[in-house]
Every structure is written in C-alpha cells, then in structure tokens.
Amino acid sequence: MKVNSTMETLIEQRVAAYFVSGENNCAMTVLRVLTEVFETPVAQPVIDAAQCMPGAGGVDHLCGLVSGALMFVGVWGGQHGLHRSVLRPVTSGFSQAVRERFGSLMCSDLRLADGCGPLAVAFLTFTIPYLRSRLNVEALKR
Image 1 (spheres, one colour):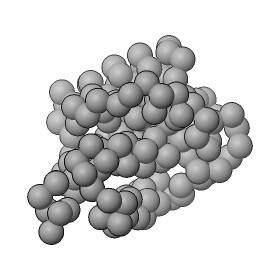
Image 2 (cartoon, helix red, strand yellow; image 1 turned 90 degrees about the horizontal axis):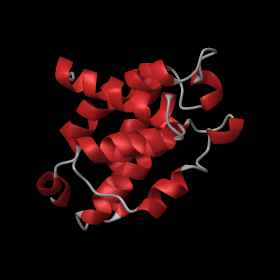
Image 3 (cartoon, rainbow, N blue to C red; image 1 turned 90 degrees about the vertical axis):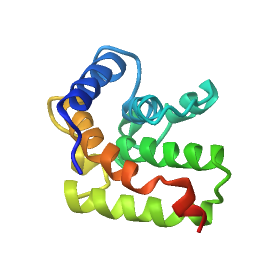
Image 4 (cartoon, rainbow, N blue to C red; image 1 turned 135 degrees about the vertical axis):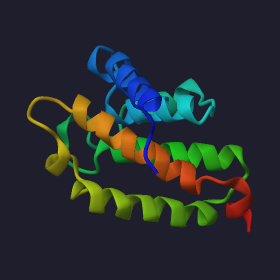
C-alpha cells in the first residue's frame, strides 16, 4: 500500500513546517505527523519527551524517526486500551520492515549529510501505510 499524492504533499508540508523550519527533531516530527494523520491526540508532555529520544543530539543510536513512530504506536495503543504485549508484534514487525526498507535502524547509518528532511518524508511515506494496515483495534484485540 502506498500513500496517494495528496498524502505525500501533506507529509512534505508537515515535515517542512515541523522539522525543516520548525523547532522539532526527527522523533517529534514523526510523532506530530502521525498524530495528525491518525487523528490521535497526544498530550504536550509526550511531545516534549520525544525531544530527548535517541538519535537526537547526535548520539547515533536508534534513529529518532523510528523512535517517534514507536512512541506513536504506544500512545495509539494506550488510547485504545491495548496492552504492550498486543502491540509488540506491531512494533517488532515495524522495526524489521524499516530495517529491510532503509537498511538500518541506527541514526548514524541513516542520517544524511544534507539533513534529514528528505529522509523524514521517505520514512513517513513508508510508515503511514504500514501502520494503517496494522493498527486495527478489533484485529489486535483478537
């Protein structure tokens, strides 16, 4: 499943607003975009927590794009009353799919010399349809 051109334009605009010209890091940007797309409100302290996720600040560990998406799945699942054991297959499958698509989960491997804006767009273009196909409350409760 791919995103349509309208969704791709929205992703580009939101990444430009949040990350490229805004004050958000990769994790915060992904978290904000996913909350909009999935219409899942997130409290400001959760967004604030994303500012310290690995990848931010040049620690070269887990990419902030990945950690922001994983935080979103946790928030979404919590709002739907799902335990982490139910979400674990979603997050582990997502991590594996990211590794297959982008070659790594590590900031040091993924970070681009000219900035991560284009990578954030590509990441969200991949992530949104992936999560749409897996975040189904009724299917996950079975």
